[in-house]
Length: 470
Ligand SMILES: [Zn+2]
Image 1 (cartoon, rainbow, N blue to C red):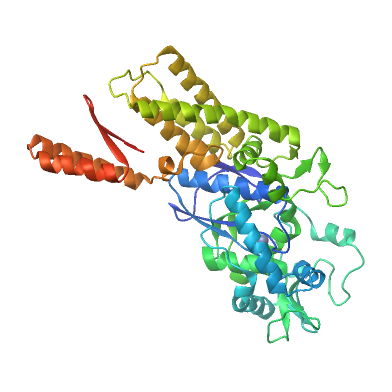
Image 2: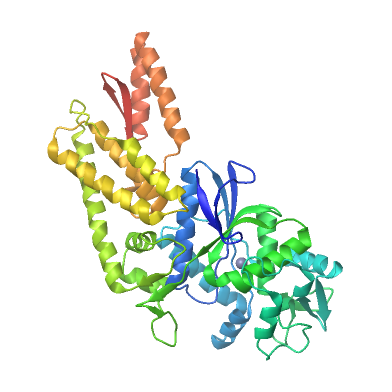
């Protein structure tokens, strides 16, 4: 039973998706005006592990990550680089896709972009204006925070406390310093879109309300992002979506902890700012993922070369077991012993850990325990059946490779085999067995040969026929 800490209720809750086996999951993606930093990498990697674990449990995850491709920072960068805003976003979104691929992050179902959803954005803004949740000041549209009675329910902040603490250098035209822009009037030379309120561009918060609703529906299962987005970004998303759709927005809110560098906050001015691609020059994707997976996603994490070095060292054990498995498979010993090894108990320990609010730190420990136990078994008995190695490899592929991404197997070993594929092979094995009992040996041989051409070896044993993928 999967349990998740929900930022909205501040409780650990049982995970019950709205429409199982489907799960809708939305992550706030990057503003594509620069390379993303290692703190963002933590969010993207941990969200990837969570998504892959949900898939491991059999859910179909509709995974949506937006790309913010119109924003003040993008316009500023285009002026600095003496280029067009869309050239800035093209350059950095290409870099984003390159980096997430290198970090072994699975591609999202859709990466919607703000600039490709302007009509939908204008439609939601209009609904908010028409229903008294937003107002127009000279072509700027602001959300009226006081009109939404639940404002503050995610962050636990109270409107009056926020008002008294608000900085005074407020845009004068706003009725209240907490009100935020849904539509910004464009200044000369800035990119703009036409609207009934004049030429302008969307504010940042509105795009996530619009694009999550478009791809996941008005109410969906999981919304995740960095801790720093709880307020105001996610608070504002709730205010927009629930006011416009008159329905609860998100069932489970998940937030990732901060990343410090050598116990200091990462910042460009302190000179301790690292992009993910800088870190990837020094360390493998698996080491970076192991480092993140070893800490709980909600807590803060300290990043340092020493810690990354020790993650890289920890990976040695996984690389060694991989060569052991490969040589065991190559021996292809079908008469050796099948040791008494409790694979189920490790599978259970792994899923118990991940079911406990995605405790990847515990799950990682289970992988290392498993490796230790396998090495012990091999040390006691050298003459082991090939089936044992197949099972060892399958466990590691399903957990360390497919969920955590801390281990990589040769491409042809992994095949990301769906369980359907395995079931189909079993059906063919049954047909072959039937052919054999009916003495239809040409058919039996043909099935074996055809599977072999696909890289699937059949192994006849006393207990029946096993298969493994080469
Ligand atoms: Zn967002």
